[in-house]
Length: 311
Ligand code: XMP
Image (cartoon, rainbow, N blue to C red):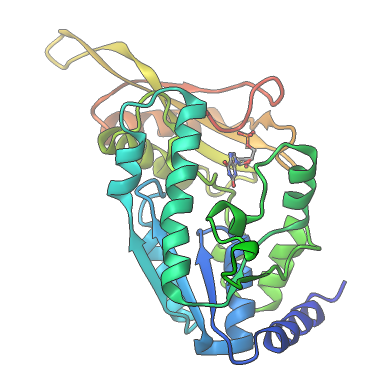
């Protein structure tokens, strides 16, 4: 397939559909929303409003990095700071499904308000073929975002969704990204779950606990950067484990699980055979840089029976 041609055709089609209307796009930091935002910007320039919801559950420096990467492409991104709203919704919740529900509900509320406030007529969405397939099979929550944010066409909001990537799978999306001249860091980004670091934090997601897992994820990403893998993450376990202070007294601290997996499509996965010295460096850095941690574990479980994330 000629991905440059694909991109050109989508740009033309967006231009034709939108006319002189206004379009809103929400960046997630992931490759799908990045590619369709660039397609829309090439098509209609300043008629596009781009937002990024900072939910407080992003990777280290992510909101700033996304903003800077798009600024270099000439695209202005409005960051909506909503961390407080998300942490309030997650407060006291320890059940994984309840946490996912609280996240989803908050996301749709914040996003819905941003979309309505934008006064746009079109929403550009990075739906890909796998989303449609998994929605049909019931693996994923319905991907029709408009319904979920309470902007039903039936209620007369007159919104139209544009999904330029819906015929492609992830590798194809990455190729369109490359054809558009996006930086490699954007089109080769590692998958990151919608609920962000909440998916890597067992137990309550407080700002303090999320900060621990955020730092651990960064260390794991840095130390595994040179290896071929599908995903490399760290997760904070719910309980506390014993450790010992320099003075020799017992203390209880956080447990961090390190997970690095090989996979084609995230449906199945196996633990990556990371070299022992790399694992040791990860352990040393986590123990040194996050003093609350007393134990660092390497997760060997394949998917199935495990999953890649922790909730
Ligand atoms: P699991 O943990 O189910 O993850 O083995 C499979 C892949 O999906 C990502 N993932 C998500 N992506 N929203 C997303 O957009 C989510 O709620 C979500 N949960 C997991 C995960 O990072 C992995 O690549």
